[in-house]
Image 1 (cartoon, protein in one colour):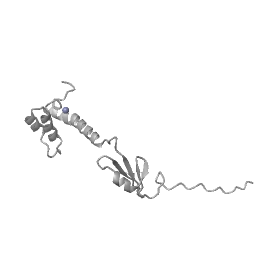
Image 2 (tube, helix red, strand yellow):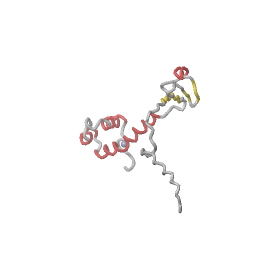
Image 3 (tube, rainbow, N blue to C red):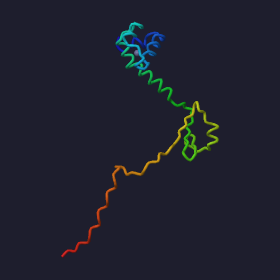
Image 4 (cartoon, rainbow, N blue to C red):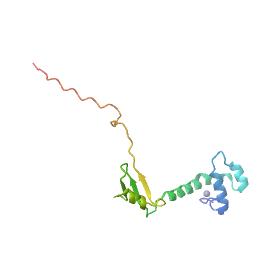
Length: 137
Ligand SMILES: [Zn+2]
């Protein structure tokens, strides 16, 4: 059947066993041949599921975990201890009291101290010498 993965469409407890095994570090993972014997799912289906479905579902889980609650406030802490909440300045004490670490986003701004360089990293070109006044005959 084209387009339908036999592992994705199998019962959840079977899929969980297969996914758990496929997500182990390669040094600890069962060989596909052995997993095939254990689960009665073909090696090619295991391989396809591992390369396509598993990565897709991990990415979507990750995306959901990283997505920000629409009610979250965004706090920005600047190096001089100034704080903004959703772009408006508020005092640090209020921010610490009202910030919800399970929901809100806190961004800390740090400045890196770098030596000044021009864009090319090369020394600036020397200005052309001022031409000597020519004494034409
Ligand atoms: Zn699959």
